[in-house]
Each structure stands twice: as structure tokens, then as C-alpha cells.
Length: 365
Image 1 (cartoon, helix red, strand yellow):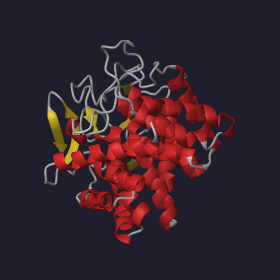
Image 2 (cartoon, rainbow, N blue to C red):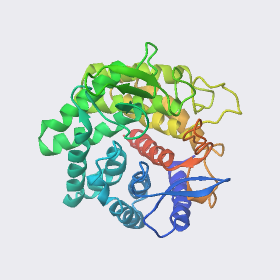
Image 3 (tube, rainbow, N blue to C red):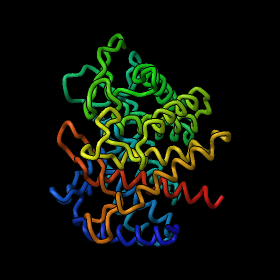
């Protein structure tokens, strides 16, 4: 499909998304045939993705209506910058305010990102070397693989302010996660629980995967994307090698249509739900990785193209005027928890649009 036609269709569908969204402070979280539209509060960890998607739509189309909608939906999240009870401030603030500042250069957006980073590093424990993830459950100091994604905001703020404290936290967290979350085959567990006083690992578990020892698909995607980003921000070859090894596992175990099942160790049969959100993340990270490894650039681009081809097909992309305006079908939030199984989820759309933007930039370069 030609880029112009695809973007036009996405814009039509996302216009329906705006019309389908109630005029409240709540944020569209997911959609399924069974449950319809599910909204989340501006406190929920995925609330930064819809405004981020709107900023991407503005970049892809140049239409001011997307900028206007992105602005309104970004400003909904202002109070999150002071939240000390979550590690997800990168997701919430950098996907929204980060894109807003990158595109507009408005100083107020930058100030929110800096404040959010000051808030986030309060969750850092020097003995553990990580930012704490959750404040609930029976864990002592849980750290989830998703948390590497929130490091991007800290790296960025360190550059913009010239203060090393943010970068230092990000590096410590990235290194500890690389050491303790990953196995010899470069798959990762979901949750590592630490002793907050000694920093020693207590246990390794899953919360959303098939088992403690399995390769939960979105977890592998978070880690892959995260270490590609860590290389971008540091130029540390260790991160680049690590990202390539994670990519090798993901690509070696990809199904024919390149969109992983919800867990790589789940039965690879049609009855097991796919996770388009993991596919979107992987495609976006592959496009970025292609720029850092010239000898394998074409290989990574071709595989990312195959993922986007599947995601853009009728098998994974919703028909225009349906699905609450969400773009992609067949994501899986938390299968063991019975939540958002075979649903449309806002972060799948966000990383799909980001991957598409990166694909266009590569094709036009």
C-alpha cells in the first residue's frame, strides 16, 4: 500500500477515534467487541499514549487539527509530573509532553518533563541500582522489564539540563536489568524482586507471562526497544551487542506473519492470542537498530517492513469506522489476569505510528 493512501486511511480512522472519545478527563485505554471502549484515568500508566499518537498523526499529516487535539490531550496529564507512586512517568509524560516539546519547542512542555524526571528518580534505590516499579503486591522491591522504557526520559533530561544525576540513575538501572533480568538465551523474565537493603535478588517471576521461566512477548519487546535506546543515548557498544542478541531471539522465533503470540513459550497455535503491541514495538526498534549496524541494516529493515506489512493488513488493522477508532486489532494486555485479551490497546497504536514514521523516514532518505 502506498504511504499516502495508508496515512489517509489512518487519519480517517483516527478522526473516528476522536469522535468516539467522551469529552472527559479520562483517556481511551482499549477497545474490544465484548467490552466496548475502556477508559483510563489520567493517572493510569497508558494515559500518555493517545496524546502521543495524536502528535504522530500531526507529524504524518501536517493537519493542524491533530496538533490541536494533541495539545488538549497532553495538558490533561500535567498533574502526573508530581506523582511519586509510579515508575511509569516516562510512558505518561515523555510520550505526551516529550513529543509535544520535540515538535513545538514550547518551554512549558520541557519544564513538565524535567519535573517528572525529578519525581521519578526519587524511586531509585542505590543498593539495588534500580528504580522501583510497583508499590503494590507482596514484593520487597519489584523491578519489571517494562521499566527500561522509562529511562529514555532520564537520558533526555540529563542532556537538556547538563545534570548527570538523571543519566547516572538510567545507567545503573539499565546495567542491573541487563545482569539480573536476562537469561543465557537473551530472553528476560518479567519481574525481579530485590532486597531493598542488600540489593540481592530475592526471586524472579512473571506477572503477565505464561510462567516464571517463559518469554512473555511484550516483555521481550520492551527490553529490545529499551536497549536500542540505551545505545542511542550512550554509544556503549555493550548495549548495542545486547540489543542485537535480543533481536536475534525475537526474529528466530517469529511466526510466519511476524506478529508474536502473547508469550513465545505459549503453544504457537491459532487459538493462542497474538500481541500486535509487541509487534509494533519490535518494528519500531528494528528500524532504529538498522541505523546503528550498517552490515545488518537491510536485514533489520526488511524484517521491520514485514511486521508493518502484517500490521497494516486486514488481519490486524481495523476497518475504518469500527473498533472505537483504534487502529490495530489483536493485542494482549494481561492474559493470566484476564484483562485486555485480543483487544485493541492504545500503546499498540502509538508504537505502530512511530514505526510507520520511522519507515517513511528511511524510505525517503
